[in-house]
Image 1: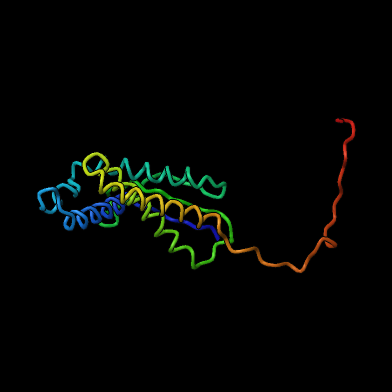
Image 2: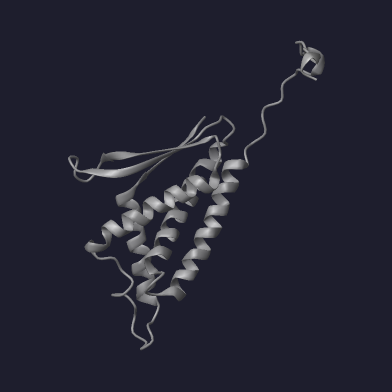
Length: 176
């Protein structure tokens, strides 16, 4: 069974905004006031956020660098308003050795990496101390995602052995 995850950029952007709002309410600035206004996204920042989300997806695919992994970038329809297209990424990990219990944690790990990566990128210039925590989180989630891809259940045992194999070996001595 291939593992298939669809990532909707609009939903990821909302997750990043929620995370930054949560942090902004609880972390004080130098004066002791909440950072809420400085750590939340405005509608003008959506394009920048989308660019960082796209960079996070590409980083994930590049760092996993598995021949089993395929990423397709396209667009889908917004579920709230059926006629508006929204960017989506489909991540497909091939193979039939994925236990069903791994699908949901892998998807959560991928989304958490993208949200942490994007939060780090958005805060890197304005709040580097906060950004470092998100960078550390992103690194942890990326490592976990890589481990998910390369840690599969073993193949099922077959009642066959070496004695059941047949074939031939051809040695070409002309090339020596």
